Length: 88
Image (cartoon, rainbow, N blue to C red; front, side):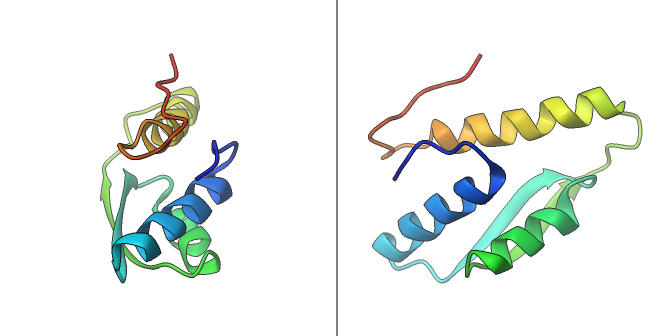
């Protein structure tokens, strides 16, 4: 699994991990601002996914952008990632 530099990369990495472990479906957890886009990207990566979102209506655009960065950092820090790192 390579270090993800985009949401697309995160889903490609997730697909590899899922295949290695025999997992067939995933739940994408993100804020509601990103749910539909995340599901489209998951589908394009070949992942059968559902989504769990939370209400981000009180967040500013800047907060939504930070949430996306956090999503990517969590994927990069996933156990089993040989290049595991935690973004700050």
